[in-house]
Amino acid sequence: MPHRLYFGEDDLLLCRFAVSPLWETQEAVRTLKMRRRHGYHLPWLRAARVAAAGLDLRPLWLLMPGHGHSPDWLGPPPIGPSATFDEEIARVRATDPDTARAGIAHSLADTPGAADTPHGRAMLADPAGAVQQLTELLQAAWQLLVEPHWPRLRTLLEADVHHRSRRLADAGLGALLSELDPRLTWAAGQLTVSWHGEHARRLDGRGLVLLPSVFSWPDVVSGFDPPWQPTVAYPARGIGALWTAPADHTPEALVRVLGRGRAQVLTVLDEPATTTALAHRLSLAPSSVSAHLSALRAAGLLSTQRHGHQVRYERTALGDALLAGGI
Image (cartoon, rainbow, N blue to C red):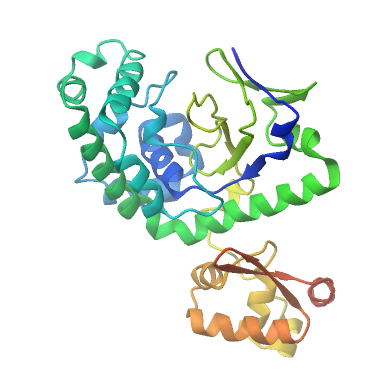
């Protein structure tokens, strides 16, 4: 059964990308529960099971039915293109108890008997307490399951946004939307998401948030109800190599010209990345990576892009040519 999102003229001008650490945290918790997702994240899963051994995630899992509604307030659309986890969790913590109870009741109704479990009854009886309990669980899940891997995850998500933005410039919004996933189709001002349940919404000048996700792979998620901003979370590109340690394919000829550190940095920059992400990937000190990046940029091999407080580096045409010549 499809989800249908109807665009007005203004909505076409108000589509944006975002990256959400809160969304990834919620989906990481869901992935621990959903066996069909495990094959995509086995290295992470082994570490996560140990990290989460003392964490009782049952209250969160109770609100994550396999085919049904999860409370929108628990994983709301991101407030900006690069919001921090602390900024996002503050919104969850401030949820009105009446809003929380309505979302909890809706979600529990999608799992037979869930409202009669001890956790279900407790959340319905004390929605304000449930907000605080669930917020604390998400905070702990972030710290244990996601934050240690966030530089790697954020790099992949931002690389997806960078790629999609180029496709938007090349092909236009209609073509881009259809390319995000085979279950998305665009025709005559309507985006159809082939997913569970029937849902229809007119965007009415609110635009659409496009949210690449690692842990929701391979699912496409939509269906946020008012007052939440319409959002589509789709599988990010590059998931296959996410948990694989990078092989050292640095050309030796390039090492002899640039030195090993600078050659490694130039080689791994297939997608734009920050100093922190590169240091994490290469297991080098951020100060060393920063020095290599400065030297490569001064030589015209790299350029920079600023996104808020972040600076990302990417190879220039000269850098690509030098790397191609060294392989």
